[in-house]
Image (cartoon, rainbow, N blue to C red; front, side, top):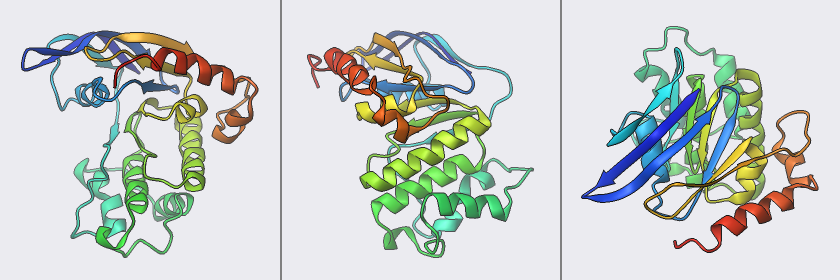
Length: 243
């Protein structure tokens, strides 16, 4: 669980976050959309413990393993794709370890088989972004923070990556906080979409998504008759916000 309570953050006497309140239950995906510069990444950094808020607090329920995928892949250039994917496990001194089969499964699902021995400079930005996704999921996080995780992917690869993420959420039930500029991605993946106002950011709208599906499926979601209705509702909140 992620519980954000009256969260405020200032930079150089300028208010960036102004009293945010929301909860991400275990097994749920909350997607956050809003204008550029609204403080979405700042919020993720506070939840991750990288930044300290000026007021309010963030609670992460019970014992948790936190996975944070940054906007940039941030791969180490001297390590292969496979070695980069295992970096999170090394940094967390994972005692469980991850089986070779599990890593192979992730590489297969993210369509990186055959790229394991390459170095980041030999890979497209999309391949690097998928490696960052593998690195984040490999530690089996119970709290998952994702900052624009699909922004550099071709559309077909993006959809298949979303299927993999949806499957992980169904099986492992992490609390997922997703930042995206793509309204369609937000609706297809999330149980709730939060619309932030322009800076100083407040929660402008909190929209519960119910597409009538029996399981989380980002492809079926896009074919739901309700999908366009949610898109229009979210767009109405966003379209007059400064960016």
